[in-house]
Amino acid sequence: SDDHATTVFEQRESNVRLYCHAFPAVFTRAKGSTLFDTQGKRYLDFFAGAGALNYGHNPEPIKRKIIQYLEGDGIVHALDAYTAAKRDFLTQFEKTVLIPRGLEHKVQFCGPTGTNAVEAALKLARKVTKRTGLFAFTGAYHGMTLGSSAVTSSRGVRAAAGIPLGHTTFIPYPEGPKGAFDSLAFMERMLDDSCSGVDVPAAVIVESVQMDGGIYVASAEWLRGLRKLTEKYGILLICDDIQAGCGRSGQFFSFERAGIVPDLVTLSKSIGGYGFPMSLLLMKPELDQWRPGEHTGTFRGNQVAFVAATAALDYWAQEDFTHALAAKSQLLGELSREAAPGLEVRGLGMAYGIDLTDHGGYERGKRVQQHCFQRGLILELCGREDTVIKLLPPLTTSVDELREGTAILAGALREA
Ligand code: PMP
Figure 1: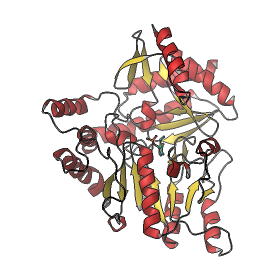
Figure 2 (figure 1 turned 90 degrees about the horizontal axis):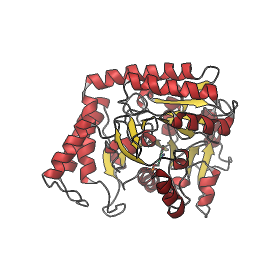
Figure 3 (figure 1 turned 135 degrees about the vertical axis):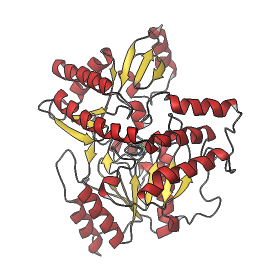
Figure 4 (figure 1 turned 90 degrees about the vertical axis):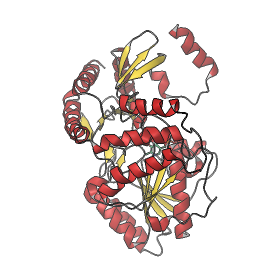
């Protein structure tokens, strides 16, 4: 029974888990935007693996390619060898992502997960600039390994590292729970003043939309200002598009709306297409100063993930998909606002946040989440104190499902 299963988890799984407590069910199957538990109950999934499932669960076109590949005994693990699967991914990535956007970046396959790409970006920035310091932003989330933790803003996460992480100056994000802040003027002032106490950093790492930080959207104008400022001082600009990328913002990259070209871009989560682990660092060609062996790893690029990722990029070559995404993005914004009268609703694309900070806070957020779960909708909380309801449905969610999910949420907000 589910009771027995959840007891097994309680007794044997480490305390490190968090969000599963909100969903006391044992899930078995999933299709599209829907999950099923052992009792056969259906749930809409508006969390989508924290952005790892932009194409939904088990999308047919990708699934077929994976099955075909495995049935043909395609190579699954090849370390760094050239393979047809890797070649096909690079070719497709160039054709559907880089070339249409005028980008010339080289691709580095990092370890399996997002934080691996962040580590590579930080290390490369230091190597290239021969500086050690970094600028990051309040509210930022970049991962849990030591380098990434050093640019992640949460005191709890940083304390868990157990050692001084150092060398990062946190700048207030332009948008945040305490209102707007002129972070560009602040940075400029710190960089201009030889006695500011702050060294010129190797890089600035930024999420153009803070996702875990509470769905805060930096304006296009601000992003352009940040690009200008980093160019002026010879600082590399790293855009962490691990969660906001791969279409979540409505366009493939979240910084596209500003027309800027970052020096380094990190991608993970939905780049694997099917929920497979994969992470990439994109770098301007002149930055590829790695010597062979300086930054490698056994699981840099799983071949089945390449097959899935290549098939996923096919979506981006289809006008139907991009048109539907634009229409559904607009609809999700409208539906989120309708569901939450009187509350601040922020977001863009298929990422929306409903802010409960001054309207019941975390406790109410938890109650809303429970109501939703009981009525068949999975969603997570985000933000500094987990006071923001996060809506992150797969990009392929149907209009009917968007209506159904936001109607459940509207009811939960009324009741809780
Ligand atoms: N950067 C951002 C923006 C993220 O949202 C995340 C994951 N939430 C990471 C980095 C770290 O990715 P991973 O959990 O796969 O290591």
